[in-house]
Structure formats: C-alpha cells, structure tokens
Image (tube, rainbow, N blue to C red; front, side, top):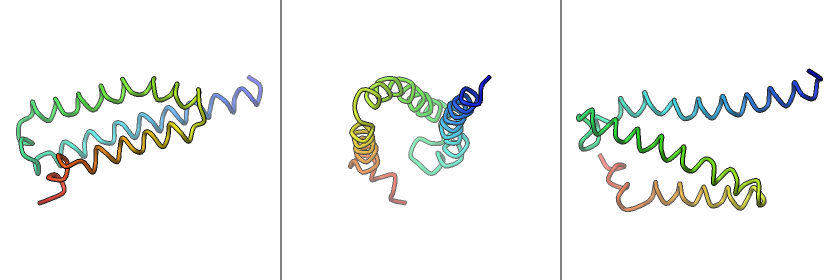
Amino acid sequence: MTPLERRATVSLASIFALRMLGMFLVLPVFAIEAHAYPGGDDPARVGLAMGIYGLTQAVLQLPLGLASTASDASGSSCWGCWCSRWAVCSPRSRTAWRR
C-alpha cells in the first residue's frame, strides 16, 4: 500500500472503531444504571431498551450519513444535535433526571 492508502485506511478504521466503542460503552453502564429507573429491574425491559437503542443507531446511521455527505456537514450535524436535545429535554425524559 502507498502511504496515502495506508493513511486513508487507518483513518477509516479509527472512525469505525471509535463509533463501535461509543456504541458499546453504553451497554454495561446502562445495565448497571437501569435499576434506578422504573421497570429497570425487569431484564426483558432493559433488553428491549437496548434493542431499541441499537436499532435506532442502525436505522439512522445511513440516512444521516448520506445527508451529511449530500449537503454541508454542519446542517446535518445541527439536525442530529437538535434531535438529541429533544430526546434528552423532552417532558417524558425529565422524570429520569429526578431522583
């Protein structure tokens, strides 16, 4: 491989590895923290929540990736940040912040 190909390969592998690391770091943390939430003692509900998380990641990865390459990356990044902000700050999720 040429140095340019090697650099591109390492860059792409690093991006993919960090993406997988970020996604799978949630699993053990959520499994421990789930007991603090209503229904968190039920393994089926915890598994369902993790399954929904994984499917959401899988379903949204391709459209958001295509949107970021089709337009400027800042527009799709802003849209993704807005969706994340809505999910965290929605009235339904506010009960999770109260203990």
